[in-house]
Image (cartoon, rainbow, N blue to C red):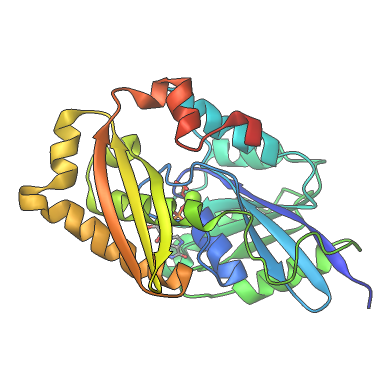
Length: 296
Ligand SMILES: Nc1nc2c(ncn2[C@@H]2O[C@H](COP(=O)(O)OP(=O)(O)OP(=O)(O)O)[C@@H](O)[C@H]2O)c(=O)[nH]1
Ligand SMILES: [Mg+2]
């Protein structure tokens, strides 16, 4: 058989389960996941390499209203990912009712390529609650397929993947076979630390955080990384540091464990907390912290 390859864009509301789905599809952790909405901020490529296919999945930030320069960057990422994919995976949260706005969102993709609607988190819902919701998708005749799945349990993910592979056009290998993301180790490190901050901190604080690696070197077999955690207020800084440094220690320990898997060896991680007041509304800071519209 000839070689198949193509682009698959994953889109949906914040917290729908897009990044968890991407990681499950490629069986690698490339995109961070958290129980809080607006976790993903960049377009992130996850590449699945088969003997006779290569699929490039594109994870996107959840679609939401812009309030600041960072949101604008996120919206631009979503817009650019909407162009010219071979397949669109439109992700709905199976624990929520399917609304008219969800249906309008799906309809807005009519004529754009192959559309698959993925209703995820089915492990959290009873079948008698799920079926009436799935029935609301029945009349969307331009939709190629509807997959109820659990990305965490793996239910139906293989079937979804087989369908995606079958929809790939003939094409070339765009990336080397051993590459599974377009993102640098540095980016993955920054995101890992942000993921732990999202997990451990409450309210608005983690949404106002950016992480920036300031030093990365290997010494005597140990990867030494220093990273700034940037936040918006002095009061946030004290919460991130915690009593006697306990919160920062917890973020650091959990991050280090994951980063060791990414770099494949021992890691020494030092975290610093810095305040840049209102950085999310300042285009220079937003760009400095890795959200550059030129990259989109
Ligand atoms: N039980 C269960 N939880 C899931 C599943 N998929 C995602 N989740 C959870 O849902 C939450 C959101 O998942 P994400 O993958 O970060 O969602 P997202 O759509 O990427 O969110 P944004 O990046 O904020 O747009 C996390 O707490 C996940 O653990 C699933 O199949 N089953
Ligand atoms: Mg995400």
